[in-house]
Amino acid sequence: MNQELLNQFLILLEASESFKLLGPEEQTAIRDSYQNATDEQLNQGIQALKEDREATEKAAAEEKQREENLIEEIGNIKTAIREEERTELVEAEAVDRASEKKNVKALLEEIEVMDKPKEKIPWNILISNNKL
Picture 1: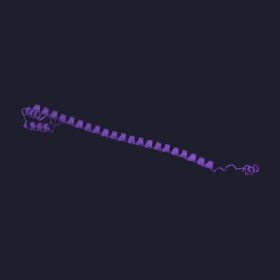
Picture 2: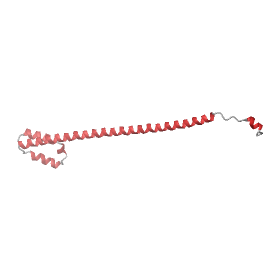
Picture 3: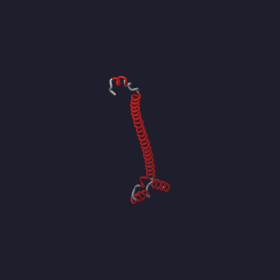
């Protein structure tokens, strides 16, 4: 057994996220089981730990990408909601303006009717018929 290989293995083992998830007794048992391992077993263990680290890093990167995608999607949804609210507001304002125009037009027509000259009362006929 090569002490340098054992030290490298133990350093990688302690840094392993999977190893950190184990309980203290399991960690001790694994450390002890490799104390008398052959160079081949240590090399296999080192390779397995490197692959585990790569898989953990890849999973973390994928999780980060999923989070970024979710944040972007939430932003897109918020933007769409704001745009919809703006559209509804513009439509409501257009309806209000149309209603106001209609009311103004009705008032103008009413004023026009009031401003039209009234029929002249034929006073002379009324007087002659003694209706006054």
